[in-house]
Image (cartoon, rainbow, N blue to C red; front, side, top):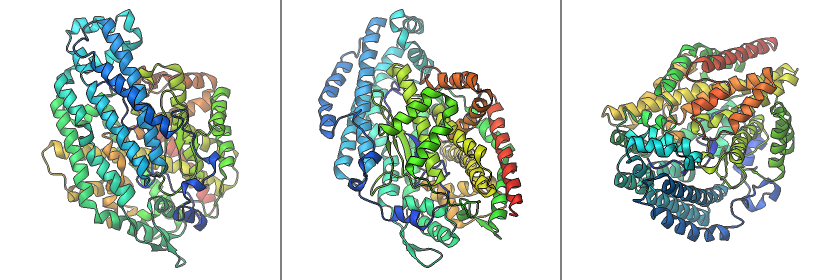
Length: 636
């Protein structure tokens, strides 16, 4: 557990579209829209203004390659401090060097990762990413001595050093690692773990490669008998189509491929779980969940409270399932029906330029400076807008401490595409404000708060649309968007979190992780969360295999807690205005300079209590009430 400034995956967002677990990609695609993703353009056919500008990280691939030698020299310099970290001035020198190295490695790794995301088939980009990742592992291994060496000092001396005036800018950083001292291994053991990082990450890499690159899907027929090409991106759009034949056929074909690879995917996930469980035992944690959450100083009670509160409001989710079934006029609601649009006859499409104006208007309550920065992001090509062949699916925000943030998305003109940009812009604004306010050691906010800013933006967008809309069919479309956010980000993420908790618990009890065991666990949770109103298709139990976030140990729960926090904050912003905005913007500027729970408390959300969870689920009930009334007014 070396010092945690290096970031293995410096991306925040909705993940790969084919595997995402934000789960709100449901809006109403027509045949033309699906065809966009079936017949993708090559990247060189995309207009320049719709591609991101990575020059604030490196001017070119050649400049990127030239950065390796200075970074190698800096690694050597950092290594030279080994055995000398016994006093405040020397530790200050080492930490300054370490942070400089962190910045350089982040630049190199992030740039390579972003270039790889542009076209995952490109051999040169794959090689760049592999070379950058090897450098990252080398830097992690070379500096693994730092934290154990510092923590090997007597407790009294440690506390004195952490409070020394010359280390004032590192005070929180040092006190945070001192907090975890009892779980630290020896310097040699930490170095070995760091050097084995690439091998330990192999299970996740194998699963990702299989899902994103090697998985093939059979062509399908739509309701008019037309042949449709199925791929990871078009599948999600097809699941949101009004054509039920298309939804069913794409569902069956998609999971047929996953079923054919389920043993490999289960083996990869089982290996990942075993790695986590083994490390937790080695470090003296009661569970791998406790180890993962302790990095952000989050008690496991927060995780357990989330599951408990969601369980106590399961009736609302079951009501939503029943509403879907009633509006769609189905005798049976199947899993391939849960993303079908509820509003009939509304198929609004938006240009990218229209999406920009919608987002700017929605974010106006956050103040003039926030709005102008978002406008700058649109003008200065922070965003890679449209899908192209080989491009990573889904959406994320990335960037480095020294660059502006950048956003990858796959804009298709739906309402959800607009919401997706608003979501990622929240991440980018969080990073932008943090980087302008904090030194590099506090430049990255924790996963626990990562989804707050993004979801606040989404909520402000939908509230703005609802405030102006009088057409009941359009209102139902917007309410559907809101309800899907709760379904996908509170209920589904909590379900995922419960799956992850139980899957790890199986390994901790010494049970063998098999495809059947994982399938049975997942199927039981689907029954519990969706209720008897859902006709359970056999394919559903394999869905766990397409969720990449299970390989980011105990990460998915933060989507749910983050969403609940965002609901509470957005409600305050709209009702209290300036006082709430001021505290929220201060929160966005804190980065990693405080513990996550304390940062949220500053913004007016205390997750040490269940109040934010209750507020969010009460909001879900109000939106559900509105949707039921609106549907009734339409005779649905």
